[in-house]
Amino acid sequence: MTQLHCYVPDNIAQQVQSRANEAGLSLSRYLAELVKRDVAIHANWPEAYFDNFGQWEGAPLERPEQLPVEDRHEFN
Image (cartoon, rainbow, N blue to C red; front, top):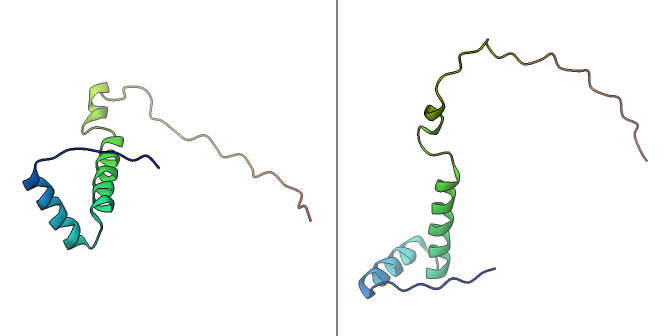
């Protein structure tokens, strides 16, 4: 696992430590959760992303008929 280091003003460090304590987490775990949450938010499509491509103007899309499930041999 990668270890990250950063510097913040003392008053911010105190506030973050206080929030970690309130959450019942170590400071390291609390910061890791914040980073994970931020990355997850930005991993999704940006708001209104698909509006940039306009509306579909072709024929209605239809799902093709499903093929039958294949028979499989059981291995013992």
